[in-house]
Length: 469
Image 1 (cartoon, rainbow, N blue to C red):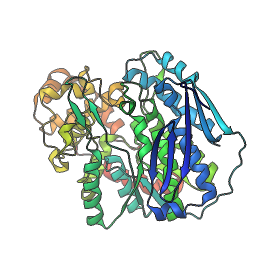
Image 2 (image 1 turned 90 degrees about the vertical axis):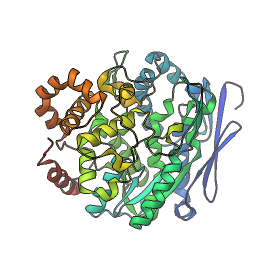
Image 3 (image 1 turned 120 degrees about the horizontal axis):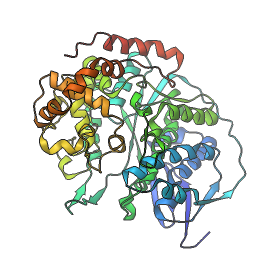
């Protein structure tokens, strides 16, 4: 199919992975050869075709193309892929100050066609044992998920999906900025693997660069991020097969299921593909094509501030490797924290709230200075470049409690003083309710019953006797 208004998408397999071609541009996805070549060809084709469709599903919207032709059979999971994108559109519209319904219209009006509409389920039922494959990033969630899995005997396998770093022009300064996430992750992988004799396997996802609007010279609508974690489930399956692992483990905490009303009045979860609800749906997809492999989040029952507490108290040997920043600016060239984003601000605050020195994980600046106020949801006028979760304001109460605990722990800085002036009275009045919410162990819809008791016991042990101030 040809025409300026049409995207043509095809793929080809290789000994190292596969390659996706979008019109004249080509993108490689690479695996460790032994992992990839052990994955049976009959299921490999199905997984790749579903991945190719999902990872390019929203490109017509951001490239303003009417039609997309896929040179492949219509994938078996197509109907599953609609919900995470629909659920992400309201948050994406808020983030870029777009009209939700205009963005929805562009998505709904996209036309997709396939080489074939014939399909059949592949008879694939791999041998599995009580082992886990972890989507590992060195963030607090993946570190705690790994530590928990190791403690309860899941013999975890660590997989890092590497997405290309990018360069861009900062709208405020006009200066060129670079991303340094992979530089710092490579250092962490090397040091972590050497210290704990634990390999961190890598999948190089070259296609993921198309998630970044700047790749196409655009400034808005990073809608493809709505399917990112679902894509990772498909990319991870060859590792599950090789290691006979029953679970794919996500690092999605309790707050990932929070919602708000967006500016157009739609109930919105800014990180829907990280919610407990969607992890259940990912598990259904995996069971449909593999019969045995499922998705879980071992940290689903607890909130971020509690994750920081448990990780740094119970597993300090892993906690020191924490990196929760995208390192997407020149200020991160020599530091794994850029000190300029809302994620840095939130992690710095939660560390201070738990009496942990932020310097222990590599922070080099006081994030309570006056010029950091625009990075915190609590103070209202948050930077529009912040991550969708912080822009949405759904984490406001957790941040209120965290500032209160940081204040009680003796943290210093302009923002601590402003908190004292503006919010201390509210925090003291609501202290017990806030602690009851954010330091409690909640229920889980993704953790299998035979694992739940062991995991809940660990959390209850760590949070049951809180000496917070």
